[in-house]
Length: 366
Image (tube, rainbow, N blue to C red; front, side, top):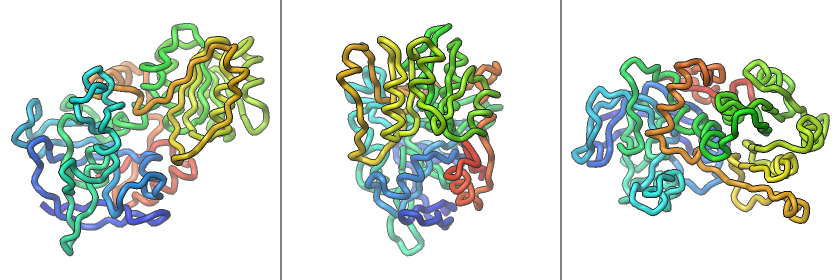
């Protein structure tokens, strides 16, 4: 079929909406009519070639939509099913079998090659040239796309698809890093560095987990004020004061848990320094390959801290996304407060607003 899609052409260039040819779904795929797709920082850094993903390609990896065709080998999905789409994974390697598909040994190839495993693409331009597809198993910046079936999560018929797409990456990343990896105990303390969508999702998850001291760190006063309105107990403007010192004063020595959502080396160092004795820190912020951060290992050694790097919240999407939906339905995870919708034709405005910080989590609605 023919479909409209936003094509990434190169660093710093606007996405171009073009009509492409979409092929038939492979045996392990389903064709999804996208209802909406979140805009994620990862889409921007791939467009700008922080990672060597071949362009031109259709990006987008926070899709939600309706199944319109089912591959011959797919089980458990039917035409008309409503789905949220998560990352692709092989399902067969030791990490997948151990319940950690976000650390699939084939994760990079399955999500960043912009190709199927056989080298083909689902999209073709008018002149017959291939256009990259299967980004994170989905390439959701298209009105129709072929999706790896095992990455889909079936949701209820009345589920708000125009809202749920970001659960497949950004919201899952922040919330999963807290709930699945740090796992703060009720009454515990946590510091979260960065008040973007991932950081705010982490904060909402920490609140849902029962953390009693939730400290948000950023340099934008309006974001910090917004965080307080959503549940932060304290805020620290790291442009005005050293966050590690401020956090030590607030907590009597440092937090039990901390999360860096920025990927900025100096912020990562601040996060590690904010930990108390035997504290546990985590990093989810993406940085350019080769980025190094200064860590005082001499001081950290005697503090017994732990450090984790976290991909996609270390989630099993078919288990974790329904948990987040259930929390949202109970009013315990109001991530909709982070979102703003944009028409498909306004996708470049959505990216600009995301980059400027005007919008925490843009959602493209088709």
